[in-house]
Length: 299
Image (cartoon, rainbow, N blue to C red; front, side, top):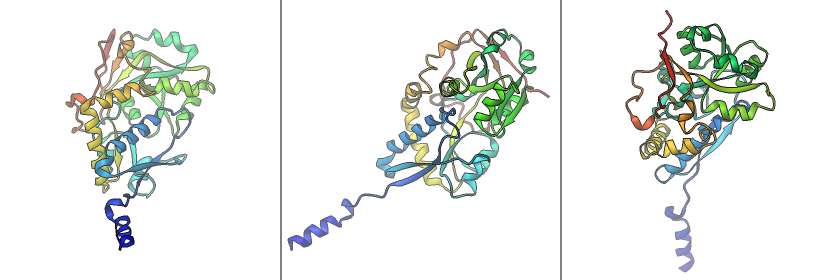
């Protein structure tokens, strides 16, 4: 009888551990793309914060394909479960957006990776016409490419991050815009391979920009979990503190270091109408800069 009771206790549902869910995400495209680690770390934090309600989940890194549109890895293939994208109407049509910005709007603040030999020339830029004479490198499928071209900037594109660094080194382009969160930490990663390049913030581009986690349209359970976790982090202030303390944020804050920059304010023609721009807890505010010029869209 005692043995039977023991067996019944061991088989009780209360004592059987719930299975661990596996969430598949892409690994790094290249070692110089160090900022992508932030999204992985944040996703892990959200999963931990929501484990009591939704169960334990672990991340599985999947090697990214060398070419292609990552959107289709979510839409059509059983390959990954979640990925981060800069939002656009097209993305929000094809995928399910978790509408809590992951970098507090920080990807819309962009300095330039440049050749060190051009440092003085960029520090002397005072008008947008001077920047329009130069050529930027950007990703083929990045929304930033559309935003910059809409402002009248010259842009050439490549598929991979390391290709753009190589194009800059070979003087096929003049600057590679990266956010103030991406540029400094990426420079630490590429400085051995590209010692003649640096991240420079004497000139900044700014446009409203939201980077979200996206999941497949029918993966409502995961989207709900991520939204709930991110919303709690944002409203409590922990999301901003996490950004400030992460390796990509430590060299950015305090934001007063950018007050001497020249800022060109651009429109974002890709910004969906339902972007939560009025949610103050989602965005950081840049202090007043020395000089700011608003640029009308190019016709």
